[in-house]
Every structure is written in structure tokens, then in C-alpha cells.
Image (cartoon, rainbow, N blue to C red; front, side, top):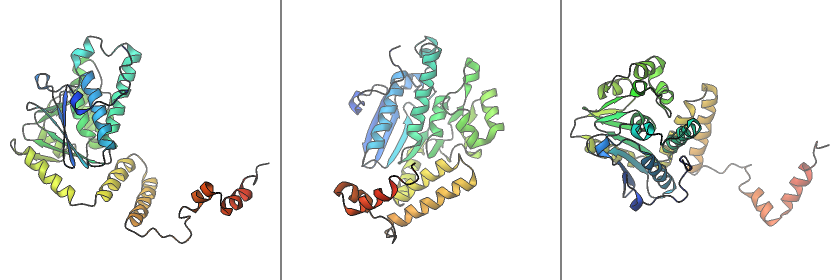
Length: 293
């Protein structure tokens, strides 16, 4: 394989997409996984397209929300096992890097400073389920189904099926889902806290629109801060997490116009460097050799 896990040198444009559809509808980006004949499974090509789309959304100044859905009545059946079984993932080393690439793709989605919504209909299993766990909100139809069947193919999840899942639904339930490999009803995902909301089979688009309307009414900067703090703090101890909460509160005060701290530099240090003002000499002369001997 020739660098199968490299980020595309040139980001794909929406017109270059083959296995997905991406549309910008005002402040919303709508990503549709578009391989309905194979339950929208994640081909090597589709994965590259997702990486490119997530980067486009990250850089966009107009997109504030990303909705991910699947074509043909299903969300996503996970990785393309036919590609994998044909050896297109390569040898063990290349396989390792392919999985690392998918982990990086998942982080790219999870770390977006936009609000992300997975709109799930039909099957969301394996990598499809892992995608939903990277989103801020998951809305699913009553007929949606989910699970991690990898054990029955003699493989293991690589980018969230054991790790992120255990952070949502605890170790005991994560073992049940992965070791038994049953396909579960959407209701259980909501009851267990893996997904947010269950809607009628014909009500998915309407519920997504209702959520978007509510999110638009919020302070967008506050939403971004809350997402960042919650995502980071869940991985750390309470004492450290609350330190970041305090910093976030200070950031909030700043963006609300209360940034005038009397003894803050207000850019004077950088001005001194750029313009070589006396402040630069005063500070550097005092600090350059202090305790340096």
C-alpha cells in the first residue's frame, strides 16, 4: 500500500466526493454517508473523504453546526470488511497505522468547535457506532439498531468501541456489548446514556431541526467553551477539572467585556519585542542571566 493512512495532500472539494455528500445550508454542514448498497460502510475512500470534510468544517468561518446521517435508511455499518479481508489494509504495521489514522479521524470530529449531531436511522454498528460517540448529540429513530459485532469476525474495535464506550456506559455494559455482540434496540442506547433522544421513524429530520433552532439561540462562544471543558474534564481528576472550569469562567468574563485586569500586560510585552521599547531592555536585562551561572 502506498501511504494509505496519510492525510490527503490536497483536501478534497465537495465536487470530488465519491462515497459521501456534503452540503452547506447556511450555518449547517450536512454530511451524508452515501454507500447505501453496502449500508454506508466506511471504505478507505470514504474515510479519506470524512477526514477532508472534518477539516473543511474546522476551518469554516460560517459553519456552526454539523449534521451527520446516512443514505438509504441506514446510518453506517462500520468498516468495509471486504476491503479488510482482501488485504487492502496491508500488513500488521500498515494495519496499525490505518487504525491510528481512524483514531485521528475520530478526534478530528470530536474536537470540532462546532456543535455536531448524529441523525441515526437503521443500523449504526461497529465504526458507525463509533462515529456517533464522537458527536455532541445523537438523535435516533425507533427502528435504529446498534452494536459492536467485531468479535464475531475475529477482530477488535480500533477507534472508540471499547474506550469511548466505557466512558459513556461503564465497563460492565461495554463488555456486554463487545463480548456478546448482540444488535441492540435504539431504546437501550438512550436508556444507557449512549444516545440522547428517540423519535418516531418519520420524525428524525424534524427533531434535528428543532435541536438546531434551540442551539442557534444560545451564545455560540459559550457553547464552544462548554464543549471543550466537558470533553477535556471527563478525562481528568476532579481537582484538575475544576481548575479548567475556573479558567473557562475567566475566559467568559473576558469575552463578555470584563477583560481589563489592572496589572495585565495588555500586549505591552509583544509591543516591546516588536518596537524595541525600553520595556524590552528592562525586562531582558533583569532576567537574561538571573541564576544562569
